[in-house]
Length: 254
Image (cartoon, rainbow, N blue to C red; front, side, top):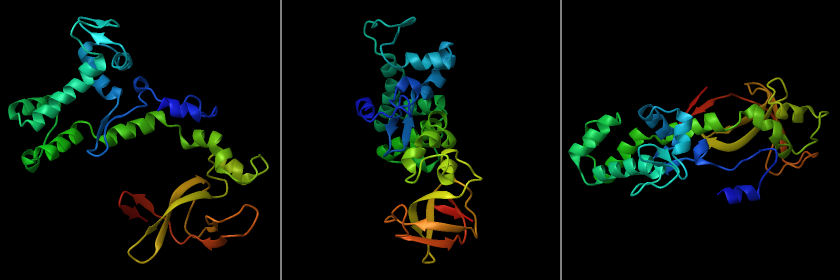
C-alpha cells in the first residue's frame, strides 16, 4: 500500500503513507462490521503493564517480544507482540464461539464487557461470532476515531486542495477561489453535489458538501451540471434553493 501511495506522492499532503503504530491502519472485517487499531488494544494493556498508552502502541508493532520484560530479541517459543496480544486473543474468542465452548465464551465475554441479548445467545455460530465481534470491536468506533484523530479539518485540507478543486482562476483576485481555500462561511456559496437522492414525492434532494458560504432556503444559486465548461453558459442554470435538509443516515431532517 505504501508503495502505491508513494507513487502518487503530493508534497502538499506531507507523508501520506500509513503506519499501524501511528494509528493510521485499521484491522478488521468490513463484512462483519468489526475493526480495531493498535490504539484499541494499547488502551486495554496500558494499565495492565503500567506503561503509557503511546509506548504500548509502539510495542504492539514490529520486532517487539514480551518475556519478563520488553525486548527486541525473539523469546524462545514466543511470538511478536502483535500476534501475542492482538491476534491470539481474537483467535481464542473466535474458537470459543465457533466451537460452542459456552463456559469459556461466557468467561471471556464477562472479562471484555460483552453483553448479548436473549435472542442473540441462540444464534448460529457465524451470526453469533458477528454479534460478539461487533460488540467487542465495533467498526464504527474505530472508523470515527481514525477520522477525528488522523484526518485534517476541512479548513486545513482546503488550504492545499483548493488548486485541485477549483477550475477557475486560482489567485487572490478570485473571490470564489479564496472563499474555497479559506473555507470561509462569509464567502459566496460553493457546494459540490455528489448525489441526487430520490424522495417518495417524486422529487430529488441534492446531496453534497459545502466548501464555502452558507446554503439556505431562498438563496439564488448557479447550478453547473456535469457538462459545464468554464467561461461559458453550457449546462448552467440559475434557480432558488427551495429547502435545506440534513441527511442523517437513512433519514432526513428539515
